[in-house]
Image (cartoon, rainbow, N blue to C red; front, side, top):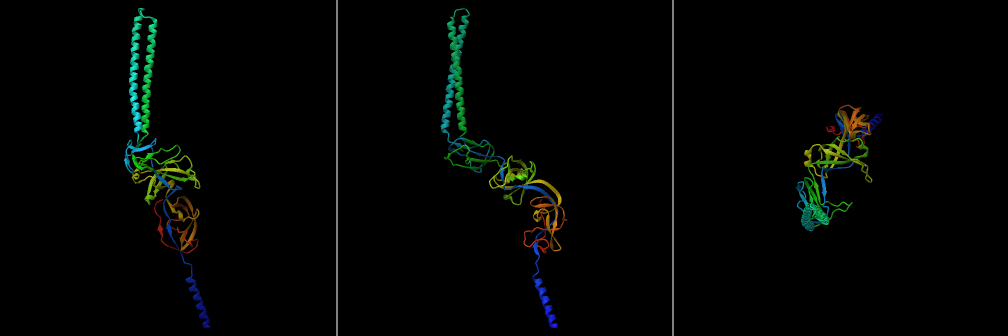
Length: 383
């Protein structure tokens, strides 16, 4: 009997040891304490936006020709009116000089013709005074009147010829102007396409080619970013925005919506979007910017201060969270308010300081399971 009892006792103990050794281990989870802070409802761009200068000119001469003078280089700062490029123009310059000489000749011819008309008019007037005594035949007066009219017409024709020649000079000046590029504003030469002595071909109508000079004004930048068409109706000019750039990770720049595009951009195999322009609030940051930086713009639609909040990654569906209570994960239903990609406002269902599980994607995490906290932490203070 004693042996039987001992054997049974041994089996019970062995089974208990086996069960204890094979008991389910608590799931290690990460948590965040429910806290008070700011929550803002926001709209973010669907694809990366771009930093653009407020003024940028991609310049090319209106005429084709050989590059004869290129006084600038990439990275050079220029002033408005500075020469950027000049094409070979000796043929046009020679034609212009010829036209200018023709102007001088036409002026001299006009002066001679008008002088002859004035002389003919004086002679006619003397004969008219003699005619008062009845000593001048009528035929003579008629001939003199005809000569005056003809010479005055020649004078007017010669003056018109001067006008024509001067306009020819202006036309050649306009052609010469097409062989030169001048800076339309103060800026930096971002790019040059071509070499001294090469033939520069202007863009054919409807076909865009590389500009000869790409000029950027570095004194002002903004961000253009696409947002989903379903969010466009909620965005308005003047709304606050937060700008982030890959080039300055961890830093946020204050901005404001300055323009919303008047049309929806549609691209094949992509969602339809609306471009939104966001201006930097602090001009001091322009010195940090480069045209073409990738950027994201988060537009603030509404903001609540001092409210309970949890990380948005901890919310299942729209209104459920897992909290740690008595060493186990407990599923709670909560009432939510404003939300963005970082935080969700808790209107009801949680108290400040409760620990909310954020590692929902970890294997084994679920309602009722035993959990062990890996690193309880408080969430950051940014909204």
